[in-house]
Length: 276
Length: 323
Image (cartoon, rainbow over all chains, first blue to last red; front, side):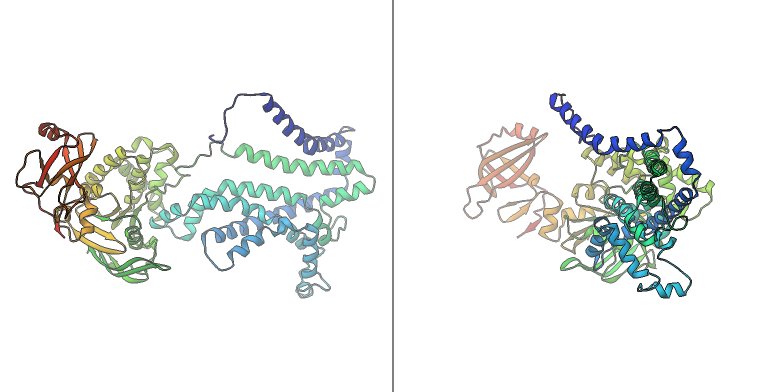
């Protein structure tokens, strides 16, 4: 790699490394390790207690369902919006591009509140009408999915957009001149070209979706065994002096996210050179 | 037949890319669109392919009105300057793409791909990815891919522009031989006049969105219609009041019936070639005259920088344009 310089190692090299490792250790590794350590303090007791508690298992199940839905929605719309942003000129493109980043900058609590205002069952803008039609959004799974999709929307798009820019349109034009229509071009050329960016975006959104707390707390109503997600359980168990279950649930959440990242890192081809 | 272009105009905002283009490209020939960068030749090629739409005018390909047809229905083979290889597919898959889109039977696809890879000398690379090929190999793969669909016309947009000089020369000769074998109506865009003169059956010179001249390479070189065509097809210099090619000037150290006389004020040697600048004594034509001769000639004439010399058009040289 050209961006890495082969320099002689000096004291400075080691000082810099120590700084980086120290920073990561104090901020990330040590606290997370403590969670793991606390989880396994009494052997597997904490995990067993947590996993035999219906409140925890229901919450974990809900979290997984919500995360999968949110990720699925974000994958489809993420790819669509990315293509729109990169491949088409239209008025308001700049505004759309800026709006995409909104979920990253606005506090999730505000997102939750906004969704409640729009879709609340009693006094939301669309809520009563939807509820009459038999679809409850706020304080139910659809609302939780929406909140989660909202906060993790930019992750897929921000991964794909630079790759779409980089691959350019020539391959797509070549496919067109060889007789491929819009769909075959997308499936056979565009999608394989952005595959790894998409996978990475999906994994990041999955991790983010599993961990969402603020927006979900407001939208869900936090009813145990119904609308309580895993992160909400962690908070509740911790406050109810059931730290063992809180640690165990935290550990499981972290485990899924880390596992997803590790799998992607292993799968992702090392030799990512382009064909130019 | 071939390609009929009628009244094509194209603007990009205020910029006029093509203006009232009328052009007939005959079937089965290799035609070069030659011109400086930004002159509109690539735009014209892309309009023929359907990758760009014209503001007005019609395109007919082999008797079929293609004006409103999208690129994927025109059955043209297009080769891009930067190969546009499908990076995630092997060479074989790249070449097979157009056939698979057309849902041809597997066995037929396999046979055809093998034939084409043989034609472009890439048989042993069929399982490689484009990133494992050299530029020249990638462009040959792109050509095979474009030929696979048995296109009515083959369009090449500066096909050798991204390659180094040696490979460019090899591929150019190879393209000429390939065309003699395949005989598909071929149009290629280039800004390299040597490439155009060497490869093409006929030449279309395009400048600033207009066609300057159409003809065979010899026509254009010997009888350029304008000063632009003359100077674009090769170096040109002014001797007296005539424009002439620098290698068509006779140079001696002895006084004779000359058009101009003066001292050699510049001496550049490039391999076998010697490029001189002679500053004439004539106050009416004081601009330096370029003269090109071989090293052997210069040695035989015992020329040196600073020598007084006499210049005149060589016998047989046609003073191209009197201006």
